[in-house]
Amino acid sequence: MGADSGVWGAVVALIGLIGAFYTGRRGPGPSPQEIPAATAVELAEASGGQLQVSPAIWRDMNDKIGKLEQKVDHLTDVVEQGQGRENRLRELIRSAMKTLRRANSRLAAHGLPEEPVPAELTPYG
Image (tube, rainbow, N blue to C red; front, side, top):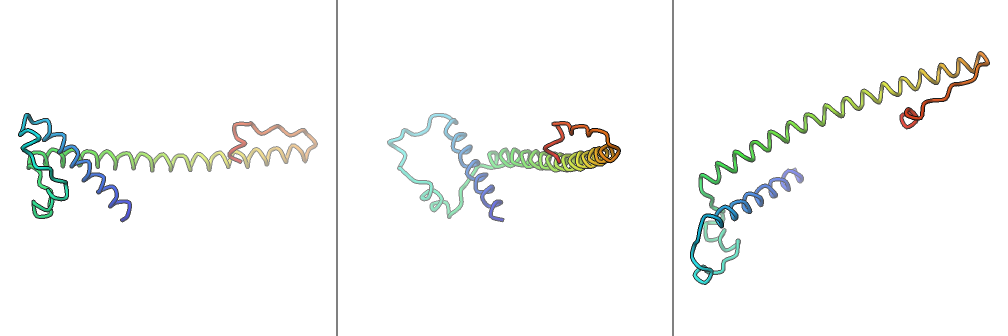
C-alpha cells in the first residue's frame, strides 16, 4: 500500500499542476496586485479542506488517467509475459548445456577430444 499511496499522491499532484496550467491559460484575469497572495494550504482551507475543480476538467483528467491506467495494465501484462518467455528460454539453454556436457563426457570416455562449449552459451551454464 505504501507504493500505491505514493503513486496516487503523484497523480493528485499532477492533476493539480495540469489544472493550474489550464486555468492560467484561460485568459487575462485580474492583475497580480488585485489577487491576494494565498498559499495552496489557505486555498484548500477556504474551500473546506478540499480542492475544487470544474466538472469539465475532472472528466477530462479522469478519462486521461483511466487511459493511462489501461496502458500501464497492458504494459504490466507484456512484461510478465516476457519474463515467462525469458525463464523458459533459460531453461532450454540450461537443458542444451547439460546435453553438450553429456556428449563431451561420452566423447572423453571413448578417447575422443572434447568439443568446446560455444562462448554464447557460457553465461547460461
